[in-house]
Image (tube, rainbow, N blue to C red):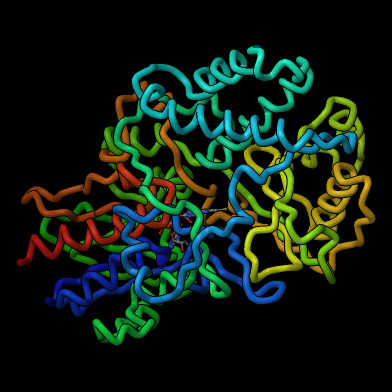
Length: 477
Ligand SMILES: Cc1cc2nc3c(=O)[nH]c(=O)nc-3n(C[C@H](O)[C@H](O)[C@H](O)COP(=O)(O)OP(=O)(O)OC[C@H]3O[C@@H](n4cnc5c(N)ncnc54)[C@H](O)[C@@H]3O)c2cc1C
């Protein structure tokens, strides 16, 4: 098949689309990638004993998960261990007071219960998830079961819950999340499988058949020769009827395409859609880009010479008290972001000397503006504040993500918000192609945010890439 296909972006979705097209006989596929690597928000880098993932980290679930399907027989995934069960989470206040283990367990169980068992109930209600969750949580904490929780502690626990939701959904606040989203599905099965000492980049090899499978040998589809790196697309002109689309890059080079598959993140689309497409995208498409949302979730990895924690320690969630919030805000160097740190956790038994801190929303964006030295010092300060009974050495090394300030991403992952509901738009509209007058797709859209069932996840991004490849495969069948 000689049709010229240009894929914008070599993240999971772009790689999925390219490999599917090539394996179905399309011989003229080019990926234009603005960065200098494949993977996008899958970014596995060397750190500590092996690697860490700055973006996607866990394979979330088994049933219906295309990533799990590719990986399950290849001995590349490790299941969640006893040590990483969620009832092991501990809550520590910023004055160093540790919440008793039994109470920590009860609070975690309550959060899981509200998010899990009430999932269906939530979907039947209208309004923001924040209102829904906060009302349930407040009511439960007022019951006899939680009589040891005073109003100050209740407020701190609510904030922990709020941050957990922000981190899972990738939003800046749970008050913008809509409860009324019916299509999203969680895949049943282990929700926290890790990629041993190789990281999530393994899935890029899986898609290219680079991990041998004796039972089902397949030829390698190497996407590197198809990919032109450092090609930041600035313009896609698709207005001449019957003529190919013209794609122009920042360096002045240009490419023709019968079909363009755009896989850039929702954050990039939001920032650039008015300048990138000529003619302008139709209003229904613009509304889907404007209405859907992407937030910021960042990680701060710290490596120590040896663990300062005990073998069974599972990390802690931060209960920020007002005194310490005031104290950090008055810190002239780091004050404006430290209170955004929601906890530190060990994350993989194969990384015994490394812990990961999490930060979301506007305070994550502020963290991104700081230098590496400031972030390292700030993270150490928070550890020493919360774990003041321990003698915590300086970390040996630190790496952190910057998903919001990176112009190639402008955020971490997408979520469904009240604004999308108000504009009567959703991921399906984001996924709809722009067709020419003959009804053939000229500009197609893939990427995680276009997956109605699995947006925000790698398996959604892969699914979406395959969906758009199949659209063309079916067109030319
Ligand atoms: C902190 C964090 C943790 C996460 N954890 C998980 C997890 O545990 N499990 C999970 O399943 N998912 C997780 N995710 C989500 C997952 O990483 C994404 O859903 C998925 O990787 C998105 O892939 P994509 O191909 O849609 O987009 P991207 O990976 O964003 O790919 C788009 C590509 O387009 C390129 N690009 C952008 N602009 C241009 C341009 N103008 N011209 C050319 N190229 C351009 C970018 O450089 C990028 O390579 C996480 C994400 C983050 C940030």
